[in-house]
Image 1 (cartoon, rainbow, N blue to C red):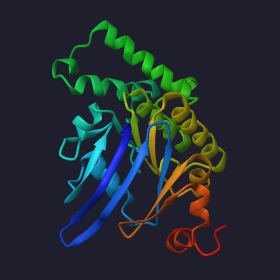
Image 2 (image 1 turned 45 degrees about the horizontal axis):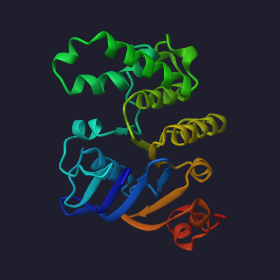
Image 3 (image 1 turned 120 degrees about the horizontal axis):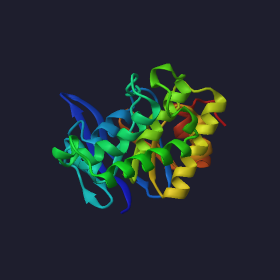
Length: 253
């Protein structure tokens, strides 16, 4: 399967079961949502998919390859990219330098020598990938600005651009619109749709902004207390009594 597939995933910490038998997929060329209340296990699933926590049961595949026991760098080289709730940017570097790291880190990670030396073709590839990502996110004019001086909305776009500069076929985005206003969120959603439509990327989006989820996602998984309680189209999710009780609230349309 092209994209991400999670089958019967179980993650426990001591006696606490954080994720219990969850199966979900994020297909190539599709924007998939993963929603649920705080503490439902969404970030734990991301951490398991990224290799940051080891599941006690289940299987995780990227592009049809079983990666359940692989390291985070190995999963990255197979095409898995990730953002975090807390932005991890280098404030003293420029926007262009931060974004370039999305491609450069992947090239250097497979070889110790490449961390010190890069061929001219590789340098050009990094520059081109960074420029394309900057333009896609609409922040090309900011490329020489220091990241530490940017607004929250601009920093979120830098974070996304850095991920898009890498060779990633599957993206896990963990609350990427946090701190954005309504206009910025709408623009952010348009960028995600462009990435999916033009690149065929598989995106799994964890997000609390339901307007973003419902307007951009084609399929949505709903998690509650570590268990998948519903999945379907945004319209089906909004109409589900189970989802209203678990997450959206009784007044949800």
